[in-house]
Length: 237
Image (tube, rainbow, N blue to C red; front, side, top):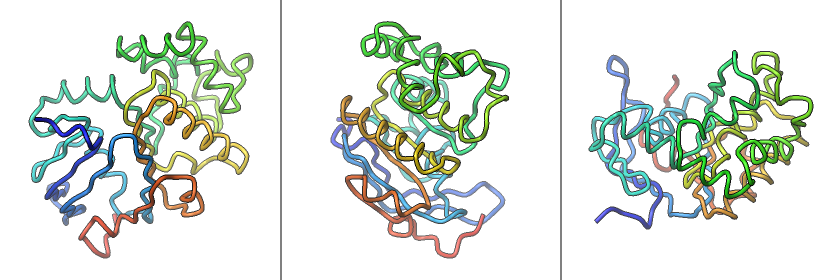
């Protein structure tokens, strides 16, 4: 039977990039379904690598990674892509926006790749565009001003908020956020955290929020330091 009590269940995981030292050595890491966890760690500690493995962007060779009831090493790359598209919202540290698309088109990409995601978005907002505009407005990006703007014309902080809107639309069951507030000023950071926690509470989604900024930790259900789960010491990437 698949484990549905945990959104994330990792056991006996080790990972390296093939020619370098071991980056992750994680005996056990679990995030209960519906939990909102803050994972703290300095730059170069393996946080982004861990999120890449959880999202299925990287493939584990040793140990088990069970995400939303799926053993990531037992399913194909296309199935991992489908799982990520339909059931995860990922805010990558580098944003991964398509520069030749508009803000609106970037936000709606999640729903273009997944009919399931699109159905949930329309249930929330009436239409896909209305739901995308609602989220952008909450993030301080007026659709009247930014909807047709190209992502490449935005500031770094604005791009980060567009990436967040793309991750949130369609009520994904698991949200993975990699330093999602690093480029935001205080007001926009607080607005983003408010929206993130509201949306996850409303949908019952699980949240893994990864950051080096310990000042944000008090907003979350639980706080964990990466050094508590990763046995590799003194790692510098």
